[in-house]
Image (cartoon, rainbow, N blue to C red; front, side, top):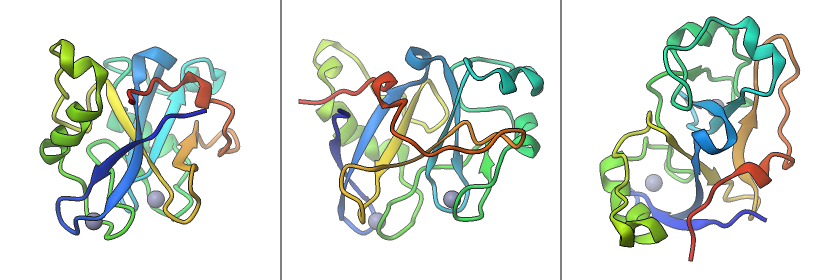
Length: 164
Ligand SMILES: [Zn+2]
Ligand SMILES: [Zn+2]
């Protein structure tokens, strides 16, 4: 069971639901699709990842050196370093600064002095709910070319979610 929090788009004002995930918790790197903004996570337990160029840092956004080895997103876009999550309604890249308002409000840790990282490349990544499929996060797991990309719920238990 994944706990979802509510956020809002600074452009269209609509509310979406998301899950914030600490990449270090599951032992992963991640990237967003440059076209539709969905999250791809790459779990280090997948042996295929050891065939890719070594990363400069773990538990963060991927290095651009990985981009040629990644399977395209289901929308046909590419997972790229520097891409941002997008509003599921108006498709505009979400502002990491604006998101601080609801992310910190939704976070239990904020009361203890935790602050949102303020970008889409740090240790926290965000998966946003598909507005057409309530409860389903828009996310791909290990979309690496040598293997088949899978979109399942089996890794959800690894997600670290702030909610209340
Ligand atoms: Zn929007
Ligand atoms: Zn996409």
